[in-house]
Image 1 (cartoon, rainbow, N blue to C red):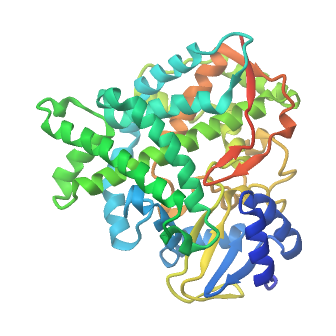
Image 2: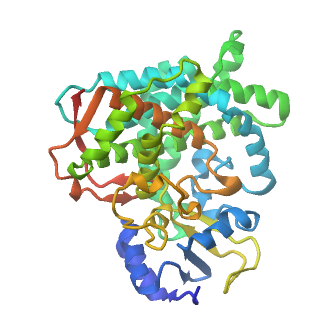
Image 3: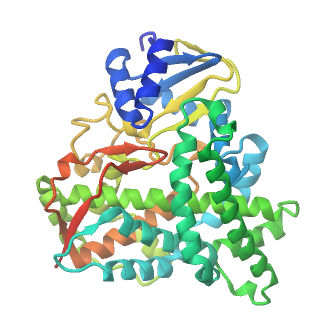
Length: 444
């Protein structure tokens, strides 16, 4: 790899200020001038944008302990505290060890009934030949699923307030996370004030659910995430406070809702394109010929082996990773190939651009699930990150996506009367469509 070029301070300042509402366009322009990977700095901040699969592998997998989560994640602390998402070192290890048993295959598979009930409710609200706005429709489904998995029927009385508040704070999370300058999250800006107020409302709701569960004499009958966390705390970690528990639960709720909804939305959009009609037809044929095993754990394993559906999901994740950009930070000086990285250097990694790097993918801007039929460069495919800090909820998210698509294409095919080619990715905290995606389900 040749020496990385450096984006000038003036160009960086101008570009971030001008394009901060659509950083994909800005990064694309910088890549044209500086290559796939480049250096940048602003004041005392030094950074690298890495879009070389080999270098990404070093940072995420081989030398992951040297590159912990960056301090920029602390901007979310008013909402999720020092949780699994934001913590590092021993504190992160403690939380990961506590949470890991909760995401075992057997436990995830046990949520099949909850997911399928909400899938049926979601699909029953669709009408033959009547268009629907894909993202809000699917996001309602994913929020129902994650809230039920986490809190069972304890969520019912506060569901509407909870859902409304989460929808609002997702927008505010985007604003604070995309501040172009770190100092901005410390100022009494209107966004910060609203963010903290909404965080307080969510804390109050979740704290109330936890308190009621602790007082419930029948709490042992619950098998949701809250119950399993309480069991693990009692068995393994007596010093884990209820505030820490709430922060972990809120983290999982926020992280497990939008990302799944967006992956399903982008998948249905691509399958609705006229040029992808044959891909959808083959998927419907595949799913029409099979039935799920009745056993929960076998159904979980079975869905992982449905080839065309798995390829569609992977191709969607390659082109439209919900978490399109994440960061790490050098904990010490390090030599990354021919680049000397100083302690404190910010490392930016984009699953979006890795998935569209032509050195790893042929025709990267073309939706082609068949590219996942054989071997592919795993270092260029990191929609859930990679290494020890791989997203802990990955298997649950995949199970939910699989069950939705499996049931959707048992009942419908999908098309659109809109020009889907005008829809572009909008990079906020997650990767949204820049306008409504209107799709039409047709009964099979």
